[in-house]
Image (cartoon, rainbow, N blue to C red; front, side):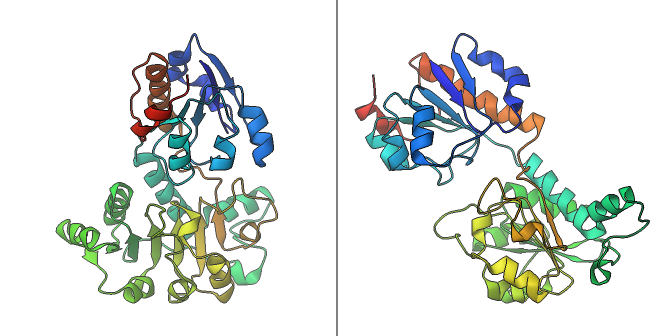
Length: 332
């Protein structure tokens, strides 16, 4: 098969052990992605199968309809709204889903929390410029960090990642408070944590608040400006899940208003994030370039599954197919 691996910014897949699975196939790795449908279609038209790195490129009906040779989209992890599944099915394009792990994103979340609370990055950057124990050149931001022990960790979403974060917080001596569906709150209480009585209380009492929700129609924009403005001026807002969980513009406005006092972010509405983004100009924001799953063990796990799905499809034994109905319209 003629296979393309998309959006491998660091060309990391070349060094993966699981690349051996694709031996014998014609494989092209792209480390950048044109944004226009026309340019994307011209680049991808020759390929039989595309391996997608999470949601880095979206495939809508307009794009899919311009890829006459495409037979398979092999997804690393799960599909999350970036593929028009109905259009792919109608066009006879199979979508294969892979597997994931909560470990890397949970560890990245905790790293961001620790770094933001102790102001590690600005301290380190200023030290390289000869400034000792200086967290900012602006007096109002040149403040000391705070420990986590005794403070309240607020977790919205008590799934696999949320449970890991709760465990980390407990080890650090924090009070854990959960919000989300009734089943999430019940599960948290059963595990010995507390559930917020109200959404308002959840935001008001948080010292660190972190989101661990899937993006869907019901959760898009679920965090509002009113929610954020209830937070303490000393609180940290953390988002390593999806930027679209927060209402557009709400976080920037709330940070300017001083509630919450800081943010740690790994996800953005437009990725890659442009250098002129407001979020990169705010001193109380720690931003990383969507590193949640960008880690060697995770890559081996994600790509091993995605490549195996490609091989199985090429051998005529499709596996992990999200849309088995594609077969009625399958391309020869």
